[in-house]
Length: 412
Image (tube, rainbow, N blue to C red; front, side):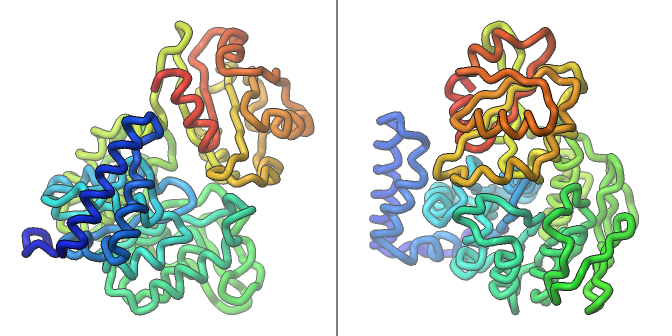
């Protein structure tokens, strides 16, 4: 718990100081927040630094393919009702970035940490979390990430025998299979719009049966567990059957699901659902996601979508046709260099929207839209696309580095 004696050795203190200095130099040079390079330097000087920094915190880890940055932010806001929080709010979610974040939280009681799916088991070993939230697993960055079944197996092995309370999405078979090795699981019916990565049983390989919202394997009997928390329309149902209204400034069904999981996590630490959900209302945007900015005398809403599941959720929350839509796709290292995932996205959902295509891989996206019989224009820049857009708020959907490029250009 927070407030115990200082866990940092002289070596660790030197590592923290050096990491902060390098991060500050990186920021001064205009190279981003500096959290990753600062964390790398600190860990080089003290390889055990992450474990030392986590020692006096109640640590909550959040992992998923989609929604982990937003959910981390919602949980952090909810837990501030119970004490000071340190969090990697900007999404630097590998060990170096996590180390940097925790190094800035010497007075905190809670550490709410977003973790890249591939690093969850290792970070859990280092930080001894009190709670782990698992939201979903779907294909993403196929050139560098393992396929989803292998990621789920990695989680399952890493969670086996964990003392942490695992808050897990009962509607995602891959998440359920991964979490089932843990002795203490709180199941949340958070929903699953994207089902294309969960048609085969992760336990035996058999074909999953999916009647309505239920699912089960007809061959081995692996099935959806009974949830104790649930998203029901605009309410969260708690284990006692009470319905608590969700009031968010963040749009879409996916964020209501994130709020439901966040309320379940907050309850683990004694924060009542009503208090947790009221605090979540304060979150207007998350690292630029959902922000509405003015650019060239137009309103642009910035939306991040990195993979087929994320694009599907995003299409469900944009303004109806004929609202103009700008799509931007890159394929740099942080995105994954394989753009074959574009063929798994149902772009017919954009029918009736004027579509404008930008980004490093605009021609890959143009071919995909052509096959989907969508009308679109390829543009050289966001400036050109905005000039061509008809009236109305412009929905701008971009994958990771394309999103960062847009934020720099439009001044967000």
